[in-house]
Amino acid sequence: MSKVVFITGGSSGIGKAIGDFLSERGFIVYGTSRNPSKKPSTSNFPLVALDVTLPETITAAVSEVIKKEGRIDVLVNNAGVGITGPIEETPTKEIEHAFNTNFFGPILVMKAVLPHMRNQGGGKILNITSIAGYMGLPYRGIYSATKAALEITTEAFRMETKQFGIQMTNIAPGDFATNIVAGRYHAPVLEGSPYKDAYGKTLAMMNEHVAIGEDPTKMAKVVLEIIEAPRPRIHYKVGAPLQKFSIVLKRVLPDKLYERMLLNHYKLK
Image 1 (tube, helix red, strand yellow):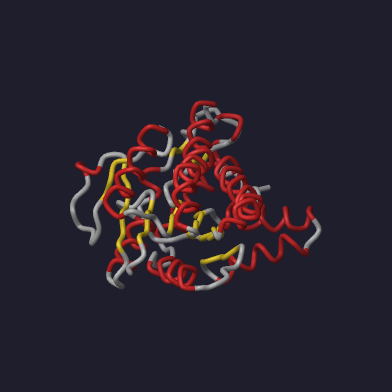
Image 2 (cartoon, rainbow, N blue to C red):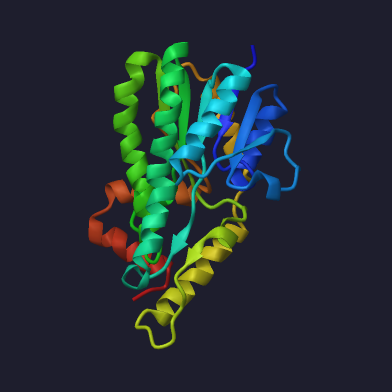
């Protein structure tokens, strides 16, 4: 029997790449989008309406898939939003929106799916976090914080649900060539701001890294590996070697030396 895979944020980028890759290999895939009717039908799988910040849409989307398929074997919590800017100048409402989308949203989706997985005797939940969640990055601090929160919460959540045959894991991607920049909230580079020059340079560098990022199919292959693994690891990191190595350096270097390394990388004083 083909496994049923439910992917949030499945209309573009990493989510779409995962959905297309799994569909081609015989999985029954449902993706989600806030407005499926506005998305071109270029995917190999259907999209259902879901906004991770609106609990009623989560309940409706999960119920729709359960009604059609009777089960959800794999949840890929992929929906997310980027956010950049000096923390001092980032509007509080945008900070709250980032946490609602990247942290509270995935928790709400897991809460909606878990009873069904428990009733069917098991399932897998894959939370897409970020390598940025392993470190506080300048002008990306809020984004780093949202992904770090999901990473740590998953560590606890997987222990709570293990007794039900449910396996949770984190996948932390680095920079991938997607359209995340178009949907990312950028705090404006303000004239007269004390952060103007430093933030402007860092923002340009971040956008460049995404433009030359890895192929999202690389993420899809890791997702398939996890689905097929009898005992998946707790953490997976997917990205350029230097990005993955930065996590190792964070673990072994003195804090101030690591901070200096980041400042040098972003050409900040």
